[in-house]
Length: 391
Image (cartoon, rainbow, N blue to C red; front, top):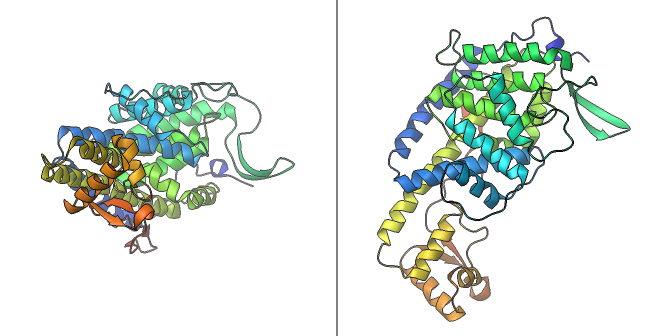
């Protein structure tokens, strides 16, 4: 098997620029729409958007790699990193590390990429690891760096990266390319094109013993943020997780040659879909503020506490809906009082009820904004599916 980095044209990737033209335009327009929507948020809602977006990306970028983190612990770690008041959740080193990387990415999105930054991210991600020889440094082991699956006695090799001896020079070239193709560089590339190439290029070098996927996706987010002139909070990892199988299939299909048009079309669709998710989150926060303003001075302390708790779960509220038992536990009240409070919230238009008796569930009246799957066809048309349920 000959890999992309063994080809004579490496690392000079080729693609059809016209195929991405419509997608590139839509991404820039979408970024402006989100920026305009965010301007309508108050300070508290902006803070929630920032924290929730970074926390979700931290959790999902880890889940793509099969690592399940506690969302509340990650959220608390993000808040602490931002200097905000945080709940007393004990975070594991992995939860603290990925939260630290996300906040650093957010704060330094405009800065050039460098080896020191990448190694710092790796050091954050690998907190608490004892099975990694080089933490915060490029790999140096002599054995091949391979992505494999299957049984240990009969593995399937999906990719083999350049030998460790080549990593420093490959990464020097990669970092120079990334900075030169930025909006302020001498060889500027469009947003989606640059972010998509950056991810595939970095993954093809695979410079670290572990954590390459998470760092590669962070590099893509940095590229998108630079294109839009500030942190985008784009739900990139969340969207990739929803397409995890095709993500790995596309990476594998694109690591054997340097014609990467199909990869960039796939990545462009994911980025546009991710932008929809971010916009839906912003719209939810606007609707939340309107709802709470309408209910101001109409709720008792118990109702307000429960409403804020449900709204903190995001657009879907509690999975499966809020039950009377949930209400009792959150408000610390009796079953009879819970039923009266819930009936009043339905009458006020805060909740709608489904089911009867012990099967009754209460859902926010804020409309859900489903996120549609986005694809880019051979002619460069951006195709939006009717829609599918959001995560």
